[in-house]
Image 1 (spheres, one colour):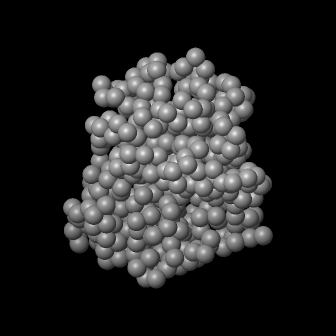
Image 2: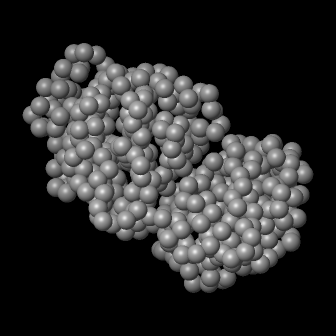
Image 3: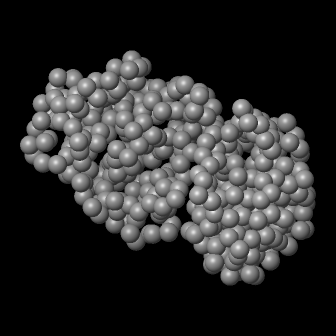
Length: 453
């Protein structure tokens, strides 16, 4: 089986060049033309897909060759792109930057090759003129398997500046598909872990996405970009399907699995809830900032990542829900918590009471912990059997003390082996963000435990 969804990969020589502005604006501009646009992001980023979803009206989906393996990039892409007219894939970091020490693995270039997709290079031209040709030529010729089909020049100062850049790029043989001036309202606020998520600034985010769409529509050749997207090669293989990989739902009545959301818990992969539903769960979202009770009949709880440190006061003030979470955990019901969820289960966060499920304290730190991890389950838990190997990603400026319990969740492999996280009764809590599509048995195991606990 093969499929040919028109698609583009938006890349750049380095971070900060304008990939998010161009990718999000292009998604919104194509959507405004009446096209069904499939939005994707290379790597483990949770925040950019929120803006992509706002631009397209569809779930933003990640394509991560490290977390899921190269073999799943195509199937997961086809899953997200089903029924769409065009797909836009936003890259990560610089075009050729991948997992540290792993060569091209998980780089934008690697994913572009796996998708057989043409690349559009976004170049910050603010401090150069003729040199832009050498830069683009280098990126376009570095790997013959990566097809750079065009350039979008960002932060161009004037008409004369644009003229100089275009003259230089004619010699490089790479077409200019867009020229963007700096527009202040396109800027999106950042803090310690990147952009502020859409859920925290809904109205402002809508305005920002509209401004990105207007800038891209005015400055880019949408017809030429769509034509380039149609030149992508056909992909062989079938789309990923949650029901197929789970094999069969857990027998019996569907247990209610409560999934934390709202502004404090915005980090989640769409495939996780799809896998839980395919495994037979009744997935019910709730907001720990607003809801004072867990959803009726909750048999299991999933608390993903986000920014509890920003909302520590509000989370702490919601004492009824904190007590409900503690009682659920005390009952032995399955609880899966990642990063922000781990902090929420601690005794306290920056001195403010949290759920007290774990005998550990959490606090903000100046140090950024960031990177891919290769992990092995230390013992049996509601998520994995002992010895299960999964890849994860850490991204936080907090510290939990102690860093692991009597029964750690993971043994992290590598140059500095360590244990990390907590397993106690039905609780599995860890800093590692994992992508369950790489190990769909995780979802089925969790739902089975919800049925039997």
